[in-house]
Image (cartoon, rainbow, N blue to C red):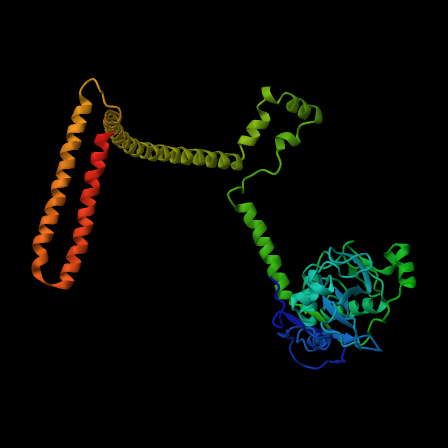
Length: 430
C-alpha cells in the first residue's frame, strides 16, 4: 500500500526557483488544548507538507495552499483556512478546507468543493476532541485525495492547468497522464481521453465558464509554487502488480474452471431460452450446465462434508446425553429409596404420637400411662433426696468457698429434679 511518509513521498521540482519554508517536524501538543499558533506551526514545519505549502492570505495568517499529486499524476490544490486570526482563540476552531482551481466529484466534497467528509473537522468540538494538530489533519486529507482522487475533474484555473502541464512534462509524460483515469493534456492544456480525468475548460458545460467568472476565489492561486507533493510511482506500480496478481489468483483457484458464460445458451435464440425457462421442470439443459461447473461440485462436496460432520456430532451428543441420563436416573432412584424410608419412619412416629395424644380409655391404656408417670415421679423424688443427702454429707469439709460453690450446684440440680417430679405429679392429677 501507499505509505504517507518522507520515504514514499517526494517533492518534484517543476521550476528552477525553490522557495522552501522553515524546517521542523509536525507535533501534537499534549496539553489541555492546542492553540491556533501551534496548529499553524505544525503545518508549516511538517517535513512532508513544507515544500508544497504556501500562505496565500495577504492580511493575516489564516489561509494556506498545499499542492499535491494524485496517484493519476494530476496536481491539485488543497486550500486550508484556519479561522480566528488575531483573536488568540484557544482551543483553535476547526479548519475549513476546499479544493480549488478545478471542479470534480468525490464523497468527501460538496458542490462548492468544500471538504465535508473528514470527521475530525466537521465541527469545532470534534476537532478539539480529536487532539490532532493541523499538520496531521492536512496530512490525512491530502493522503486520502492522493489515493482516492476526485472523479470528473475539470480544471477551471489557468494557473493550475499550466502547473499540471509543467509537472507532467517534468515526469517525462510529455503532457499525458500516467493512468487511464486521467485525461491526456496536450500542449494547449485541452483535455482528450477518458471523461473521469482532467479536461479543458473548453470541453466543460457552459455553466462552468459562468461559474468561473462569477465565483472567483477569495485568494488568487499562488504562481510561485515550485514543488508538488507526489506519491512514489514505485508504490503505484506495486499496487497495480498486486491487483493483477489477485485477479489472476481469483481465476486460478478452486473455481478457476467456473464458466462465466455458456456457449449452449449463447447459441440459442430468445424463443428457445424462453421455452426452457417456462418448462424447466421437464428440461434438464440448464440443470446439467449448472452441475457441470466445478463450483457446483465443490459446493456439493462441502454440503456432504458438513452433513457428515453434523451427523457425527449428533451421535456424540446422543451418546453423551444417554450417559448423563443414566447417571441422573441412578441418583433419582437412590433419593427415592431414601424418601420411602423416611416416609415410613415418619408414619411410625406419627402413629405413636396419635397413640399418646388419644389413649384408648376402655383398653386400659390410661392406667398404664398413669402407672408409668407414677414410677417416673417416684424416680425423680428419690434422685432429689439422694442429692440432698450427698450435699449434707459433704458440707462438713469446712472450706467456705467450696461450700458456697457446692451449695449453688446443689440448689440448681435439686430444683431441676424436683420441677420434673412436680410436673409428672401434675400430669397424673389431670
